[in-house]
Length: 349
Image 1 (spheres, rainbow, N blue to C red):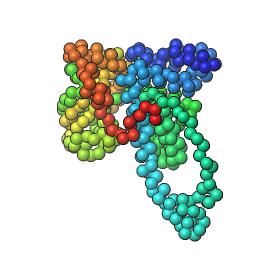
Image 2: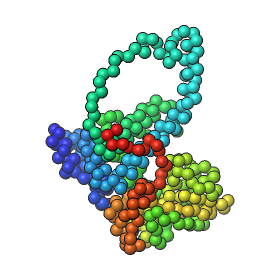
Image 3: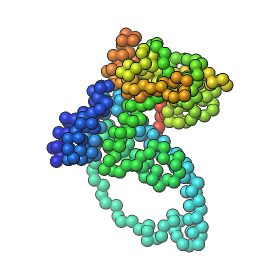
């Protein structure tokens, strides 16, 4: 059976294995339809772990950043849930203190017999993991913990990521989360033919009604100060506000575009706005539509370009590319999201 798993993992392709045309992959859209047995094999978590390791090593520019985004999102949501439950925890501690004074339980709220622990067994020596394995294991662990917290929570607002996973589906869920939150995204579109370069900040003035709607929606979840000229701090929401800048005509599927982050924004009383934007990733337009009752605002589903495609596009526009610079690599492909002290993955831990 293990041989069959390895054959399927080696022979199959997955989303974005080679390029934009691979949005429908053999592992997700072909092999499961051969027969019921193959379908069950394609759902095995061991297979998806192998797939993720292969993708992280083949295209870290896309997949490592995507898995990190899932990891940060899980930690951020866990902290949010913990903060919301602090009050109930405090009440519980007060109740346990009262019980202690009455002599009902010990200081930690457990009976003396429940405190007895078996002697610790000797820990097995773990083989050293690769960086990719450590990243995957840490992310899966955080996803499972968050799922458990969300199941225990009764507040609807605490189910932001909607993770409900078990260990036997954890790597498949990680693959799906990485695709849906990083590789394939849906955004409102600002359309104006021109040239942009990754990592180079530029300014725009929004005055058309449709783009007043765009900037109002993009900035709606951020503090008022960030909408009135303050420099935006990504740590507030975990990431910068984003939308798609379609700089290549026509506005149509398969054409390139760019994801831009709002670094500074001032929305005036009449809805017009001045913004500073940072281009962070080239994308392919997968689908484009006009939102009803929005004054002509276009929305689109986009797919991130791989590193080689991004290099080729930037060279065609500028004759050179920033993607080859050490500074760009050091800054995490220019994404510049919040830094988390827990995000440092040490090989073998």
